[in-house]
Image (cartoon, rainbow, N blue to C red; front, side):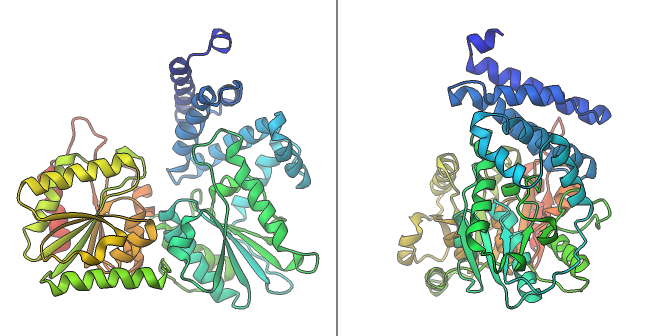
Length: 485
């Protein structure tokens, strides 16, 4: 009661973390779903007028429990996620700010927690089934996976397969603004923007679902309502299928996380192909792809040509971004030693993507500065200033949007980086890709997120979770060098 009357931000964060971790303790120990813990976190995430105070409960609920249950690719964790999210949705619909959420759920006949849970469990169990439609769909709505890497690895595969299956349908991809950066060069799709609040308050996280419903509603008329298909690749926009979008007979759901019967060694890109083979009763395969704007590719091509005309024999793209997940990083000394090792090779330019956000850019600039002090030629530019760079050896540190970075990677001979969007982009472009995979010892997770493409793609797994550490920087660099040989 004292925290309600006299809230303290630090104490709220500590308490919410303890509740969330205790929930996972109960779950992992005996598969027990402690509803009271979820209810308490929901209250903590919505009780205060000050949203900064509410963030404690929301961050613990989504950052610890939800993310923890999403990453293991196991049926038990998926079942637990469905229970948690069904309870969270049921709580939010009772709030005054959740009135629209409640009304829309009622429109789908979902009146209770039991209704929501029963539906998603049915959807997942029947995800490989497709009875077909009386006539092919005129419009196919495809949800984004929200993160760029997953959209390249999964959504791009679905775009291609759906275009093959329904050649006369318009494919409308629904998601964030970065979709235009990576898919905007594809004339066969239309992109409709919907923002997903990954770090918003609890109720805001469901606003994207309402926005998707609005998009679908505006795109259809009474005449073509029967000729649409919604494809959900386990998207956060629908909270991994928990929130409905259309009648179940017009809905395809990719159960990417919780199908134990699926082959264990497949990447998510291979799994997406496998799923559609089962759904449509056919055997086809499409690698992940990106469709970039031609003007950006041309500019990246002129930059690479200038380097090669100056005497550069190989351009190696490096990205040490981790999307805010610091567990995926290794130490600064690894990053510095790796770049210097690569530059020991004659006539080599390291194209160093400085990342996104102040923290990553600051860290990248410091690394470039240390290399410069050791006599390495360096230059730091934005994408607009690349055409003035003409060196045969050294580091070119560049800042650009994801589409611009993708275009630059397309001109390189190799890509090396941590598990992030850029590994999937590089592999999709046919660039030999070497991913330093840290922050997880879950073999299923590592296999699922293995970059897939028509060229060589290697994983160098580093166990950063064992104490004392079981890795040495020089050993990792040797393994990367060996994989490249």
